[in-house]
Image (cartoon, rainbow, N blue to C red; front, side, top):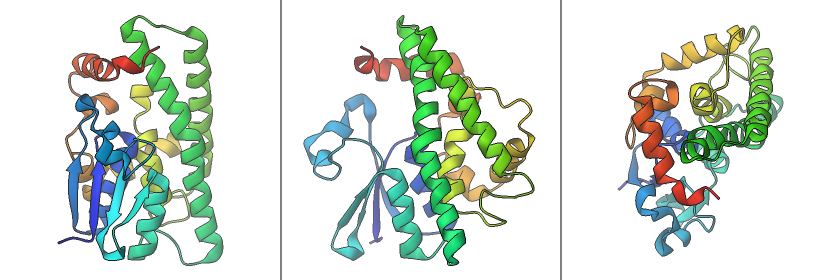
Length: 235
C-alpha cells in the first residue's frame, strides 16, 4: 500500500500534486473526483477537505494525516520526500515566495479570467469589465514571471522546484484564459523546457487529459461541456 492517497481531478490545481509525484517517481493511490456528480461536495469528501475543493491527500504513513490546498500539499510532499525544495535557507525562501505568488496571484486572476470567458460567457453572462480586469491582471502577472525567468532555466536558479510545479499548469493554460503571451520569450522558453519533461507531461494525462486548456483538440466541445458542468455556479 502506498503512503499517499490522492484525491484530485484534471484542473490546474488538481495536476500540481500529480506532477510532483510523477516527477519524484513516488507511488501513490489515486481517487479521481467527478465534478459532474459533485463528489467534491459529498459528505465523505467534506470530512477530508472542509472547503469542498480538490486536491486533497491523505498520508497513511503519518496516521492518515490530511492535507488540502494545492500549495500546502506541494510543500508537504517536498518536505516528506526531500525533493524540489532547496535546502539553502535563502533559496528555500525564494521558492516558497514564488509558490505563494502563484497561489495569491496567478491562480486567482487567471482562474477568474477563465471563469468569465469559458463558463459564464457561454451561458449568456458576458461581463466586459470583469473580462478586461482579470485578463489585464493575468497578463501583468505573466510579465512578472517573464522577468523572473530572464537568464534562468527555472523560477529559482537552475533547479526545477515546487514553484515551477505550481506555476506551470496555470501559466501554460494562458490559451484557456485568453491571455496573450506575445513578446514573453523567457516564459515561452520555460514552457518549452517543462513541455519536454516526460513525467510532467505524463501527469497532465491523469486522471484524464483536458487538451483544450492548452488550445488543443476540440476546444468548442470541451468548452461547452466544461461550462455545463459548472452551470450552477453562474449567478
